[in-house]
Length: 387
Image (cartoon, rainbow, N blue to C red):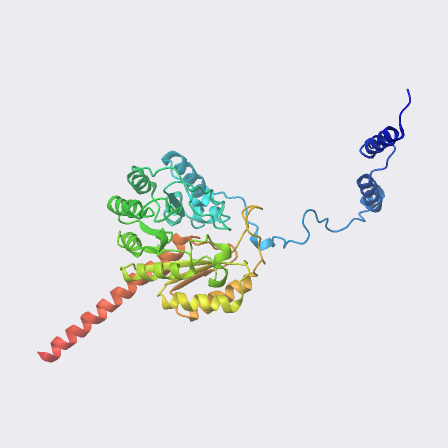
């Protein structure tokens, strides 16, 4: 059989193409040789025996900032922690402490050292998450799952939550929720109803509400603010310039300021917000944010280090040193904030029970009693002079 010249050329091209895609066993692997070279250049068995090895072997991404030692926490433990965790399972309550994998869960649930179990529970803090575990927004720092259409609200949740908390025995409870832009009122009525039922069943419990911005609807903000809570919290999260890059596009810095300002005008005793550091902010931007918060009559501010929940979330720009957190605490206190919590592991509700019961709420009560006493003495003096 004779092949024409074009057929021969075509057959040769096919053969060459086939050979190009076939790797013969004798072909050396570049990656294998590279690994072998690295292995050969490394410490030998004799080096290990003689203890002539590098002090530290760095694995993974060497360019990203490494987690400092002061951000590493111990495994949660203690009688109060174990009891609260057991109670949560029995009461079917969900906490943001667990959902967001908070590093302070051991501290907050453990109460104070040296206390009995009952005293520890009274000093402990837990943040209960209302309205489900699915948010309608997608902030770049948050690990809570998101959806445009979360499941409907549980109409029995306010009653069940209030009953469970009243039997739980905590002295301070923080209520928060996912954003529910799918609801006409953003869940404001549901939130307010839960607070009112808790106060009916256990008026001695101090209640903090950490809310969303209700899409800027101040009527809904006022509804929650007038429900009987003790602290109204709403987080600005970061400085104004970085808000579009850190928070969901529907969350705005000025809108958050309006929420906090309206809550105070609605009669709330204490308003509170929180900022993350380490997302790319600078000192001037932080100072501007603090000035705006004071203009809105915010009482309490907390500073904490941003910690990347997963690789799908925004990267950490830098790890802020504890000394810098101390400096911002002093700056904020000098500006007139009623209370400041600042540290690498501080979160919005970090040890809220201990910090705010002792330093803010009881302080405000003392201040009111002092003013009343002074007014009574002035009235008595005036009466004596007239007589």
